[in-house]
Length: 228
Image 1 (spheres, helix red, strand yellow):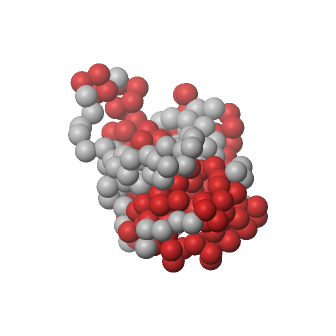
Image 2 (cartoon, helix red, strand yellow):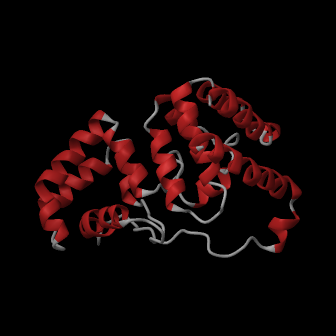
């Protein structure tokens, strides 16, 4: 399988080599040369090419992020990642100003300071927040989480219309209750999915449409290599 996946991943990567940054290209190469990271990356390349924020794309992103080399790649400027436009639109890139709540939670759990603060908030406040109540103590605990470098994601994280209940519960029932009416905090809308086809200008831009077409075709081969 490795002999099949490596050439396919490299072929997909070459479609974006022209405008890719050096840092992103290095991160992608390091991931492709690592068997575990490569096996996590292939489903992302296949699933994140529809422009519709599908759950399969979200799951693939979360899976890649749990790998060290995958995290470095996703935290880059993403210029070398096939499907980067969808990743940005769906807020699946951890370095962007608005991040998907499930990805934000995963990032927080991987950071000692954020995880410590968020763990206290969850243990002290999860039950009350699920009932729509948030005490001043709980608001303080959540603010302490948001004040950490990674926890700031929670101040405006978002979900998509195709998410499972884990994201919407985190955003609306746990974070939203305590962030409501908090100065300086603006809750992001839940639906950031793409439902319409690209406009005429997007289709006219051959630099965007041509690689996307190639990726769609190669994605089928990636899935075949992975599962058959």
